[in-house]
Length: 550
Image 1: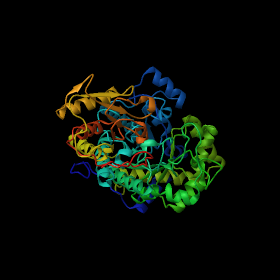
Image 2 (image 1 turned 90 degrees about the vertical axis):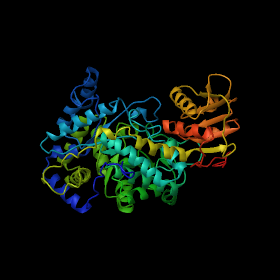
Image 3 (image 1 turned 135 degrees about the horizontal axis):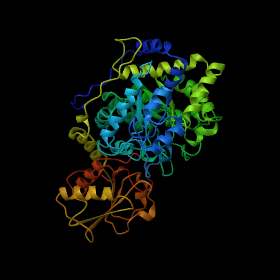
Image 4 (image 1 turned 135 degrees about the vertical axis):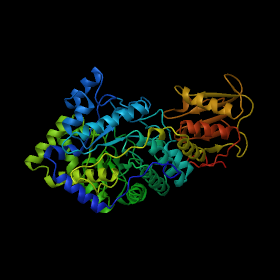
């Protein structure tokens, strides 16, 4: 594992100027259709590149006029593909109209098939294949691979080196599945207090601490050979609206943005982040007229001119409601003109391509802007392929993927367990002693049978007896829960998401895990049994509780 003695090789960072020069040569040899393709990153229906169900084929025809993902690649020659996964308990579920991730073996077959389709095209350019694998509430690949605790849990652990190692471990497994990019880390700084849409997807509310975590996550992903993405620029944490449905307004002054929202983006860029995802956010202090996704003042002047970002700017999903203010073709042109290089999930792929080609031929979209965007995308692919400086000047080799033996490895689980244990926070109760004794009864709010089973099994491994009734009550609450989900007779209440709900709990002992992963439940069991301390501190301020009782 990168950073912990494994064998996966990170992609060389390369000389940026040489990579851009080589990419410019490649771009110069592309047709208009291939150049337009390089700035598109759609999704597709179906879990296999070449064979899909009748329903998936019908959905692909509505999206792109083709039957299969492989045909979509052959027809549109896209710069990349995003893998999507619908889950009802995911706050971004509306962005994912389908699921094309299942088991690790299935994902590897799909990515291999997609790259095979791309290799047969005249340009011979491999795909950038990415997904929203943040861990915590937004996680596309949920089984068969190591699962990290949420970003907020890593913020509670407050150890950037543990964060780097955890992301290197998780990234090694994603690379083995054929992913080349991850749409993480979230660089949003959340406001203190409940109510914002980002929640535990963020590392916390302190800009300096979040900046250190974001930089560490970028370095971890790079150790695994993956491209890292900062999102949602210039910061979604100090908003109350969710950009999946509305256009949130960032009301901060420019000075407040500089102090409270931009530090993690600056740190991530300094760490070498490959992509920055623009948010569908109206930034009042910079451009109150349009969302950041479509604002040259935000993306060209601020991101590139002032923050010095030279990588790939990618939109948030264009199928989200705020991006559908214009027809798909016009939205694609506007996003590119604003400074984006890669257009994520156009809702109508054919219309987006047609709009870009028409604008290019009419002069509305200057050829120089399209070539610049495609060149940046190609330069990233060259780096991921291993530097791309030697070999044929007209092709980018598909990178060699780590073996599937890297997936679900014990060493990677150790990295996840270490950071989960470091995150455990005692917010009320006695430090350094067992928090439960005698038989233990584990209860949860609705729909968390998996977490209950994980904790019960882990408690039994600690030598404790778990019972269905009576005993000492341990109650789990998590994402989306409210005060009625609390148990009034539990001796211990555990918060598996934002810790604010714990302020209303009456239990004599309160523990925050910030996450409901297997590693978090195992770490919780060790704390309850008194075998491990709870060294974490809440990464958000709590009005009624200390950041740690220890």
